[in-house]
Image (cartoon, rainbow, N blue to C red; front, side, top):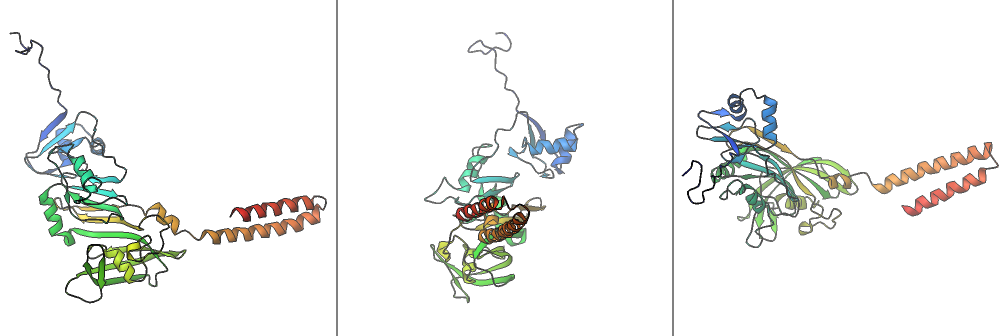
Length: 357
């Protein structure tokens, strides 16, 4: 039998092409330093580019954190082909990923966690499908939740140990968790705190100013950013994380979240609940590094809080009238022959403007 032939077919054996360059970790190190030692002559900017292009994996998980803490026994892989596992989904944006956690930005209308009645149209299911591209047994673990109608930043764990670390030490690990909301009416105070006991009755969460023996104590701090058009733009800082906490506490203040018909809102100008988790800061559960993530306020929120359009148009009309009468006097004095023609055009323009708006 000739060398390199398959004994069954007589054809040359197919040689598998190595898809990764693999380095074994033998001592603790940060990922950047490790790669620069292993890849002789490579620059820091080149390593950062590889990380940004998501072609570096640690133990089969794409890692983008340059100071990721490597431990002996880990395996670092550098893909030789362009990454084809890029995450894209219209309802979910991947903000950060490493071997232990995922940080995402969820759109309103998407459940955080799979339920008995809804298993697929959830952030949990979407992320499970994504991590299974690396290994079919991979999955994500729920750490906290956002209401379906609430948009914003969320974190998931990639293993049960990390999940337990985050859940058991949540208040020590999370340093800043903030929301922005538009509420009905003008807030009376610029700053304040709401405290109450919340009781979950499945379809509705009830608030009590005293401990009734059933509720859980909840604390929400708020800061009024702007008042305009009969609404208030408010930042909210949660000291506790109860179900529907912000929505119930805003109702307690007499200023329900815009679009929240369950908790007292009578208007829905945005076609959605005006609540967004815009900031999430925490100590990494494994590396202990401070992680800070922030998203802009939703564009629709900014639009609703702009100065009243009718007021702006009124100011513009007043300015036009001033120009109109000024032009009338100047033209009548200097060019009496064309006064009537110009006067007619200006009047026509003002009539069209008023009719259009």
